[in-house]
Structures are given as C-alpha cells and as structure tokens.
Length: 311
Image (cartoon, rainbow, N blue to C red):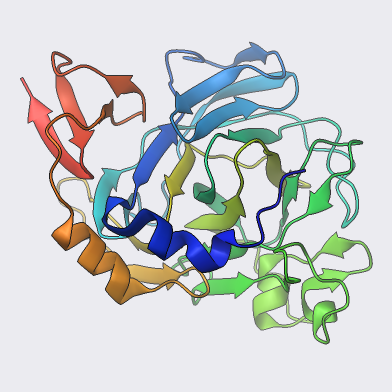
C-alpha cells in the first residue's frame, strides 16, 4: 500500500493557499428508501475520492442529527447542516485490531488524493468503532483515528485519539494501550473516556471520526455490535479543525458550539489560508452533496470554499 511518510510534514507547505475542503456526501437519490444495495455501490463521488458501501446489505437513509447538533464548520469553511445519512441493517462481522470486517454495514472510501477525511456520524457511546487501510484479507492495517462526540446526552463530550505509531496505524505497543484496547478490540468510547470499569451510559451523540488518507488506498470504516450511520466524508488537505453546532428548528434553541482539532492541526494557519485564499472564478463548483456541477445548476453551491445560491 502506498504510504508517503513525508506527507504529514509537508502538507501545509505543499498546498499553501490552495487548501481544500471537499464534501463527498451520500446522494440520497441512489438509495431513496431502505433496500438491498450491492457491495461496492457508489454513494457519493468527488475529486478527492469515492464513498461506497463495502458489502451487500439492506441500506436506507437515516438522520445523523442528535441533541439539536446537525451542522459542521471545518477549517474555516461553514458547511452548514449535514444531509441525510445512510445506515445498514447487519452488524459488521470480523473486526479486530488485526482484521477488518468481512461483512455487514461497513463503509468504503477510496482516496484519490492525500489528505484527511472527517466522517460525520451519530455515534453510540457503547459501540466499538474501526477504521482500516486496505481491504479485508488483503494485508489491512488498523488505523489510529480521532473520535469526538458532543456530550449532551452522555454528560460531557468524549474526545480521544487512538495511540498511533510513526505511520499513523494503531500502536499496540503504546504504554497506555489498555486504556483504548481490550484484548483484540477497541473499547467503547465511554469506557475510554470514563474508565474501563465505568457504569454503562449507552447514549448517542452527534460527532466525527477523523483519519489520514493516501491517494490510491482504500479505507474501510464502521461500527461493531451496531450499524454506523454517516452522510459520507469531508476531505481536507490540512489536518481538520472541526466545530459541531446546531441549526435548530423554529422554536428550538441552538446548542453550544463544540470544537475539536485533529492532533497537530494548525488552527491559525487554517484561518489565514481561508482568509487569504485567492478567488478563482474558474474553480470547480460543487453542490451540497459534494458532486461537481456547472454554473447553471440551481440551488446551494460551493466554490472556493464558500457557499452561494444560484436561482
């Protein structure tokens, strides 16, 4: 598998003022209602990669909003309210620290560029979550990831990063590995946050999973003992700095904003990149599903990292 060890040190220099945020979201017209969907079916596509279902299962649209949290701002770009997510019906089988799941409700991201993906989801505090580089049975490697969950129903936010080796894979030799891994399984988020012997909370919260990706590599991600729900992937060339917030319905209160940074994210550099970015009138235009469109497309569009409405 391709692994450019110089990438992490050179991203900010290599991309400079052209730092990119791209949404590769679920196109609900592909699966408008719950139905059997073949493994490998494309759910969303963009310049940075392709979002698919990994395995055949009964899949259908589901909301990822929770506790009035439903929107994301990332690296200075306000993406607004997240679209509908998609979830499967079968608990994934086969996850361990050395093997990826071989079936069930698992997602696949095929990267076309080097960078980072942020996966919005409604996470359960008592479910294991996994991300692997490589397909099951093909030399797959368990990734370190950063997980963040707003904590309204949980009691406090949960934020952690799995121990990583020098290449970003799960480091089973880390001194504090038992905090994160029990035998061959990643612990529940609530056990990581509150201790292995903490009472079961079993609550849900809106949040994100973040990990690096490399062009030409394939990434499996999902839950264990449950079915992960997501609207897709947000690709960034810089390490992601994310703010979760809510766009409430009429008569409801907006929740307090919740911010989380991927380890090593340079938030000051991110702000300057967005602020100083040169506007390119010929830059690609995307709809809110992350699909590239023309200037004639009607609706909410994104160009140069900014939203506008074309009537």
